Image 1: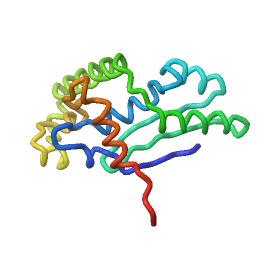
Image 2: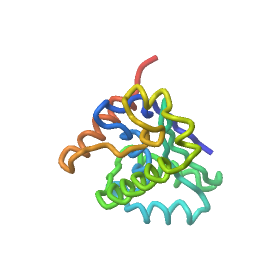
Image 3: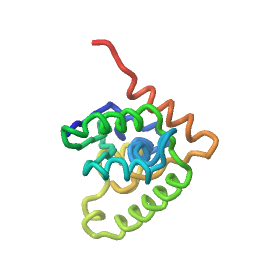
Length: 160
């Protein structure tokens, strides 16, 4: 298993776009300049592997799992999703609907309501912890440039 972690979690979301890190990480594996999401899925599943993106509070992680004999393919796919993401509009719409449904379910869950807002959410004036996963309010025209700017500022290589 290979995990690539970058400083691109919810803590780095712009104030007017809560959920951008989460949405970006989710969409990284849903299409590239060369392949659609289903094509990526078929390629990695054909060799019994997995390729997933997720974001937490402090960072985002892309995880690759393949057998040793399939490492070259896995690394090619990993590089492709990181360097050539497409952020397909249809996937954005579908994922946005999923997130909205998740928020609604969470707000109706007694356990979530009883816990109250998490500290990172309440500092942004967001009512419940589930809203930290809210979809950013971005117009279609600004979406890709906003993502690219977010990715560039949070994942750019630095000298140590």
